[in-house]
Amino acid sequence: MEFLDAAAVAARLDYPGLIAALKDAFRAGCEAPTRHHHRIGFPDNRPEGTLLIMPAWDERLLGIKTVTVMPANAARGLPSVAGIYMLMDKDTGQPLLGIDGVELTVRRTAAASALAASFLARADASTMLMVGAGALAPHLISAHCHIRPIRRVMIWNRNADKAAALARRLNAGNAPAGVEIVAAGDLAQAAGQADIVSCATLSQHALIRGAWLRPGAHLDLVGAFRPDMRESDDEAVRRSRLFVDTFDGALNEAGDIVQPLRNGVIAREDIEADLAALCRGDHPGRGGDEEITLFKSTGCALEDLAAAACLWRRREM
Image 1 (cartoon, rainbow, N blue to C red):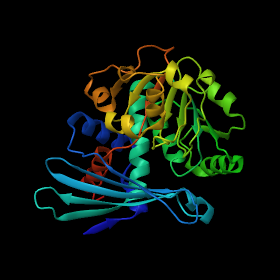
Image 2 (cartoon, helix red, strand yellow):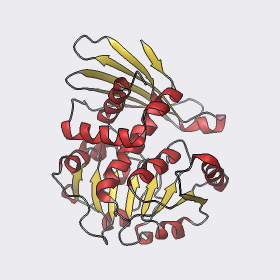
Image 3 (spheres, one colour):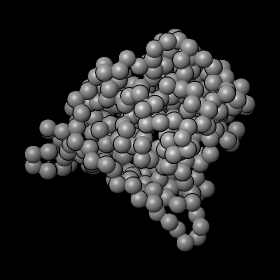
Image 4 (cartoon, rainbow, N blue to C red):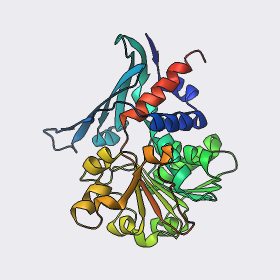
């Protein structure tokens, strides 16, 4: 059985191809049981970790991803997220391909956000704010630049040095062609200028305030994957037309949805559609240039399976 490390995954999963593969997968659907979600405590009062186990299968392939999220790793100079994916033949259960789970995850996550933005962001969106400077940030920037005419990207992070370092690294050769990338010092000011605001953090408190968002903005919330986490305030949710990647994930795990629902800020029917409905054409997405749209992503096993299947098809590359 072949194993694809992070470099091999990066070489074989380009964003145009992966976004198209995800769109096809959301249209077709698959079997994806609710993921296992376990909290991992430590005796030394470190922030608790999370273990995620995510299975999915279609008519031909079966896959499972195991991921850990350990926020305390940052202090050790280690990535917060680690994982592995196993792709198997659905009929026989025989392993076909082992895949680096982190690279697979960041790429399919960014591609899912870009896919949603293709329905929800203004067609002329040219300015992006990236909130967070971790492993997902460069992928979200790249993926969004593939589906909208982004010309300026601002990066904000609680640690301003990290935002500046990421901007320098991207400008040194990894930035999409023709895109200016700068570090943002004032979050409120940057959010007010952005056509697309993408957040990928482990924040437990709202970072983006609805009062800051300009008419026509699209808010892409990728982090805050537990009910006690939050990246947007109630006003942002109240002002926006709401969309999610999956209802199961959003209604059970996403603090940006769970908390406003619990507090009566929104009702279940205010969530207009999931990504499958958008991809099938059951919902048209954005309806006007002045609307504010919000997409909450929690990630789902269908996305992993679609990305792994794409890698399997491209194994001879």
